[in-house]
Length: 115
Length: 109
Image (tube, rainbow over all chains, first blue to last red; front, side):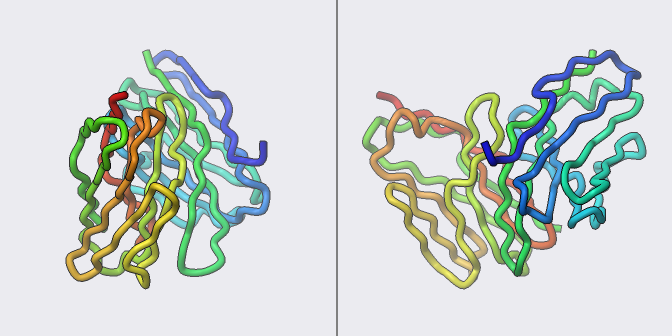
């Protein structure tokens, strides 16, 4: 499968614990995006990378959230001191940004449940 | 930033009928408008997109129209089938992607 992959698919944690998610984009894609999706809502943008550079972060991304893409390939999203409000589906997408238009392809998501 | 509104939130149609989902956007700088289909427990899947220099695009049973003046775009699915049942999201791409709130489509056999 050459699509976007995410690991783990499901994560249950207790409030206050740290969690880390991984995303592997489509291999030739230079952009990688993180989104959060809660039940009944569309995905909300969190942050994106072009190669290894983090170019934009949403105001939704509190100080407890950090993302990295150290070698311009896979990316990790870490949430520190998780809260119940962090429970959501975390989606990763990648794109090959060559010009104006920007087709994004999504992974299956990581569903986080904070107890 | 951009604001994308999507209607209706739920839609039920008989198999074989057509389904139409409408979205409006606020930022005239947005230039790319994809549609995604999301099935339960899966990530969104790109099904069709339209760019700002085009008014209509069709791919088999799926078509999308764009009215830049009115800032709205629509998804049309003809000859619906039960496997079309899913949640559909529109999005507008300006500096980043902004998604609508989704339409839950049910196709009744």
